[in-house]
Image (cartoon, rainbow, N blue to C red):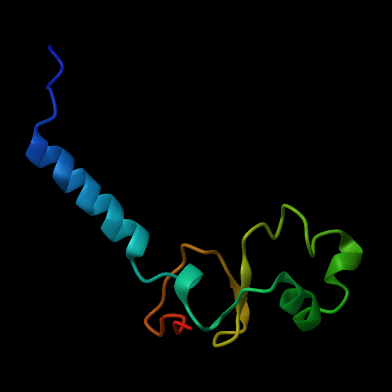
Length: 86
């Protein structure tokens, strides 16, 4: 079997799909996501005592102020509201 060479149309679709995926509404761009890691410690007192408040177990997860739960940057929900531009 010989490999198929990508066509210009295929590359353009891939670029468009990648852009759309990167710009899709997700928790990373939502105004309800507390972007500050310290907000997580304030919401869960004592978390840093266990060494997890700022470690790999939390990673890029942040607190969703709307749902009061941890969310990853790629998570999504129906209540997405984009961060207001300054």
